[in-house]
Length: 110
Ligand code: SF4
Ligand code: SF4
Image (cartoon, rainbow, N blue to C red; front, side, top):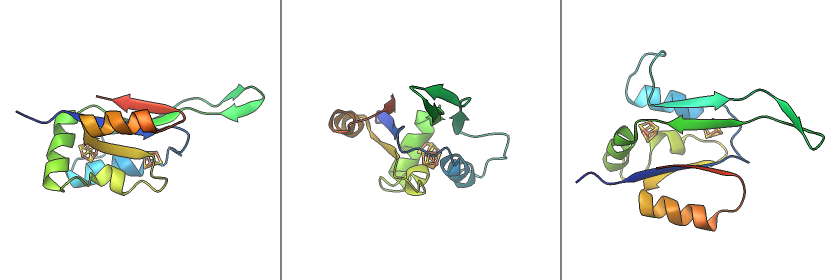
């Protein structure tokens, strides 16, 4: 049976650079119009007097993530390239544990 995969994004650290999306496209040799992970950028807003902007990668083919993890022995190409170490891809139990241990603003996809 395929392993259950989770993806965790530490939103306080993601800078919306899209390197993870490009790494995913590159790994699977996909055209620029196709991807298994897309980085979404929200509109800038003012919250409590500070400028804020939502940005986060969204993985929508976790079956492909399972393939990456197995092939790359746990080192997902998208997470490996993240300059801010904001992105974590792993087996669901690991990701749930990390989510419990990590403080701050998180997005968890399962
Ligand atoms: S998760 Fe990392 S690589 Fe992806 S957009 Fe955010 S900072 Fe960039
Ligand atoms: S784990 Fe693989 S398929 Fe999933 S988003 Fe990262 S590079 Fe793409």
